[in-house]
Image 1: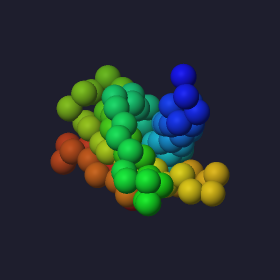
Image 2: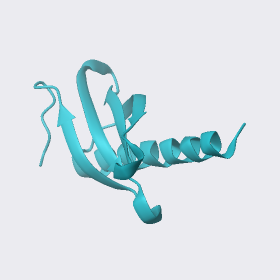
Image 3: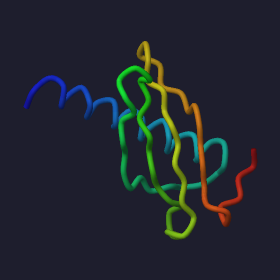
Length: 86
């Protein structure tokens, strides 16, 4: 495996961890991650997709910025039937 692949795997793993923690702490929801997609390198963002555990109809997508070793949710979208607190 090359370093790029290992680095991307580490970024995705951390972004998924941040996403799961975000929904658990802010929304009191357990979520399942279903996929990811990197934005162009200039943006240093990975988009994480998933759904609420036990209800695949309640889907979401979040953008996780990962520049400078920090991981932050920068954007989010979700299905109409997924009601969030914020």
